[in-house]
Image 1 (cartoon, rainbow, N blue to C red):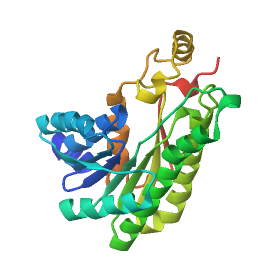
Image 2: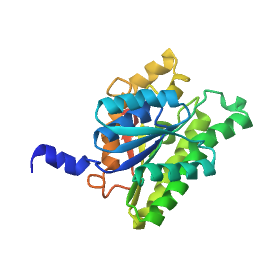
Image 3: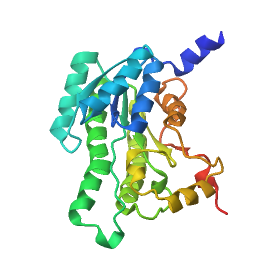
Image 4: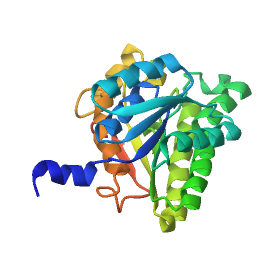
Length: 262
């Protein structure tokens, strides 16, 4: 088999449809672009159409296909309506990425109930809603599917100044493993991509000069991640061939941060 044909067989996603919740953001937008370049039709799900249109332009320039769908991640009805609209337009869904997230640098003793519940509802409950709605759809339709949830290094090791965010991401890691166990018999794989430190919108709120230096000192590769660094892990977990026996896993993409101690 020729190299190109082999890679297409292992990682190609022709005929697949991926719903990328948070696809209008920096990290998930690039992940969606990678899926599209591998042959997947991508649905960018978010709140702001203008942000999606810029990313869709990149996808179309690369020869990919995609479109935007708005959704309220805090609403179960909105999530179910999303599935219905995507199926009507694209025929089915094969891949779900949950990447919507918000953060806050509020000191622990100053976190209000309102802020706590807002972050929990966006980062954790929305993932629960999406997994529940799409999981039922996958099971009812008998579709072998891939669910990729975005975790965080703060869900693995404690990081200061992101208390609620860390708690929600740790819960997402646990939820993903539980669903992987429950749904393996349905050929639904559930995995977590764990980014280290990337220039995402929510990270900028907590990055001052001192914190940046601390991060780089503990990152053997001595740099922050680029969104492109997440594409390989995304294609691996999305592929029915390359990722066929991978479920319940945490794929850490952090430049060695978690391997560095002293």
